[in-house]
Amino acid sequence: MSTHLSARSGAVAVLAAVALAAPVVAADTAAARGTKLTHAQAASKLRAAGISWTSSGHCSNRNNRSCTSFTRINSGTVSGIITFKRASRCAVTITGGTETGHASGQFSHWNGYKVDISPTGCVTNYIKHTFRYAGKRGDGAPMYKSSTGNIYARESSHWDITYK
Image (cartoon, rainbow, N blue to C red):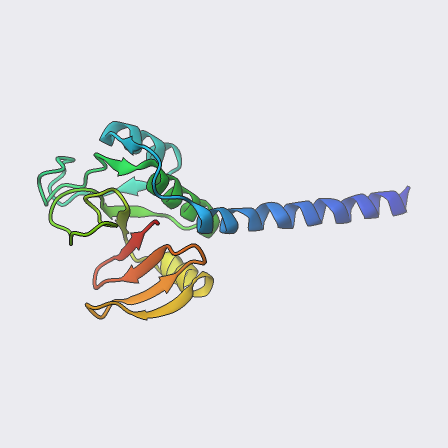
């Protein structure tokens, strides 16, 4: 009986280790496309996952640069940041979404591919130890890249994350 219990305990430990590693893989493979969400849909998913957000203007109007909006964010971007939170086990606070005032381009905030998050020690350590350093962006921000191409760029006041 003792041997059986020991073997079973070992199997449980292996399954637990696999379960803990699984979110890291999922965080790396989140597809950013998907469907476009309303602010309310995205906010509901983020809130349910324990992700908070802040807005300097205390608003969610996509056309106001002082707001933090999720209007027309890609469902894959929302899934990506939720998976990041679960994998990192860090508190995550979004400081920028799809509102106007960010740089343009195909994989932009406006087009639903990016979020900005607060640079806590936990978040920064997780990014630097999980993803590959990929050099500096044109604006000098150090970049870290996942194996699927997601980019984590450390800007002066936040992490700028692009989910591809």
